[in-house]
Length: 110
Image (cartoon, rainbow, N blue to C red):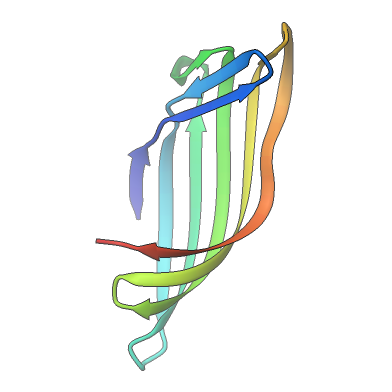
């Protein structure tokens, strides 16, 4: 279980979206017995309007991942991510789906 914060910056046309979302993560490793494990993780980041700046109104990111722990502090994973924002694009307030994709990666934790 973890909590944290990050910064985001996006530019669409002449509009700029800047936010400082607060986040939470939950990770569970299912041990396989041979030193490897299967990781299940979920992440949620949210910035309400008070943490959104420039033309931004809010920010929300959701991620789900499944990974294989190849060594004690590293894993290979596949995940799905959705990022939604509300901000003003060319003087029109709109809901903007920034990302809605599958991805793969390699992560090292220390």
